[in-house]
Image (cartoon, rainbow, N blue to C red; front, side, top):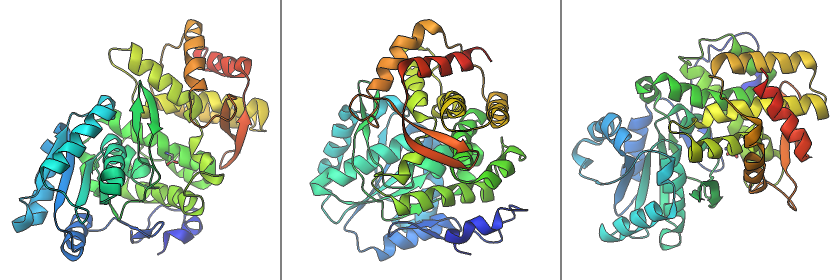
Length: 370
Ligand code: GLY
């Protein structure tokens, strides 16, 4: 089965018979025996050296399996950074560049990014700029990075908590999805990735949304992950540089990123990406109801599903100005106007909607008053 034909099998079952390799912009995304495929990829790749970028969590839980698969080739150099969004900055970036230099990396070296979205974003950025670019692959270990960050070639780092403000579009050479990794994740991390899967249904595929909302979402089946990646992949194949269609993936992210950054700065236990995006999706579904034809019952359905899955965040009116300032810094804006992707209906989105301050505040109030 080719994922490009995926729409045809959503209708009555998610029993995807086989999870064949998906092809993206010139690179494969492996699902079956993916770590064996990684070993094969490295063996056949004619690389002078390869390095694994990881963090302390992944180093503990996932690296041993990788080493086991590499067998006699497992004496590769490891670059380990601290886990968490705080590591996605220029200082860590410089640290990784320096380690590559110290380890003697040359232009024929390969960087294997083993970890979540921080590792794939930072590792992709480091590799895309080191000696004007070396090859890299992603082995995503969180649900969030499997269904989102590892697919589509976005790399980047944050500055002053402004997410992904510096980065490149550079495609990995391959992506290796190992489903067993997500079985090691705490529920909160599963829910974080799930928000992006739900988004994929909302923006592109009502049947996938229906499938998800009737599934055991705290333990998403491999097939659901496969389908989610297929939806995202179709978008990024068509618009790799986010000139138009790819902006649909930003649904929930204009407000969600602002809430995420606000929480990162102010909260002791900050919101996860998915928790913040779920808030963003509720607010932007409200804006869709006001501006782009989403019906009241669809808004109610989206609100019910998302607020049933994610804990309520105590958003206060007094946060509005700070949130607005953060939204103004969003790189998706044009001429200092805040730009949102909204829904026309469940399964269909509409890009480039300028939202005024009072509309944005009204949507935040909708969430607060739930
Ligand atoms: N995470 C949104 C995108 O890849 O475009």
